[in-house]
Image 1 (spheres, rainbow, N blue to C red):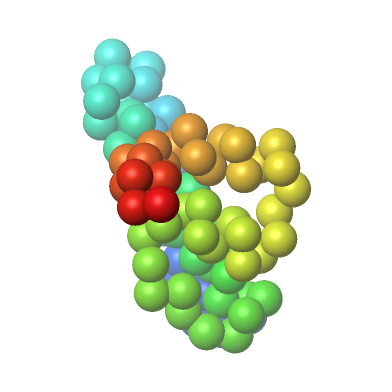
Image 2: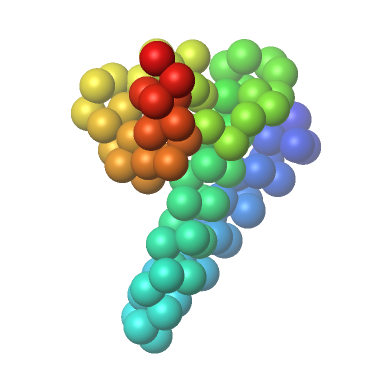
Length: 92
């Protein structure tokens, strides 16, 4: 595994641990942010592994579509990424 991919994956796991710690301490907004960061970094690691290039985006749904995620997972990504999804819908 390329070092860059491994670094994204390791940071995703650290962010998830931090999110759980924030949740336990009642810092809910921070926990949400850290959880979102964890998901984004994990998807970027997978994207780079599968596509052999960086996605150059923060759009979870775009990366999910390009990786052909199943519908159930895409629904979760839309829920995690509401502002980007809303902007896309308003452009149509």
